[in-house]
Length: 240
Image 1: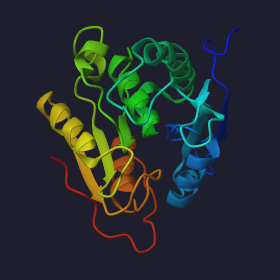
Image 2 (image 1 turned 180 degrees about the vertical axis):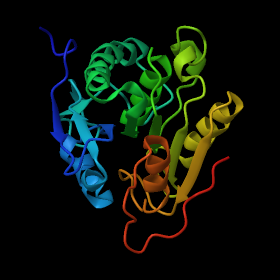
Image 3 (image 1 turned 45 degrees about the vertical axis):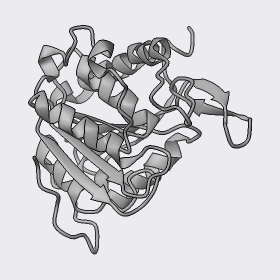
């Protein structure tokens, strides 16, 4: 079986009865553990939320070191508007299979697909093409493909996820994926009728950096669970 038929992944099981699952997709050059730290910060296990952390199946040279690093598809970070469409679509198949397995465990309507940077682009396009209705999708520092509708078989979201609630966070000082990319995606999805929660943070290109009340509140809402408040968290972002 090829690596594109099945993804390797790690899990963090809930300490209370299983109420929902978040599947987390890391960014280029990262590993599942980078997002495991996020779930620990939000104490999702205590809320009955299972974490699933796939490992990107492709390796491509890093612009910084020249060494091969994990990625979902080959990507030049100096030209993020150029998408390897074939590579992006190829990873949808094993991700959809992983979602099917989790749906058999808890139900598709209790699954959120989350991602950072390139993982956010993969999470969004997978969610919008997935055949079963998901609970939501959470994206941090997403870069919007230049022609997102062209990546979707019907030119838009699948009927099952046409009204999928979306959470988007972006750092104002992100030099890798400019904030305008996340804002543009926000506006496009809002125009398609998705309820979008938008949150702007002061930091740069780090996975879910600075996130406190907004994302836990979103997960509590779409998964119908009680995610504990992060100490020192302010009010949640508004939904637009």
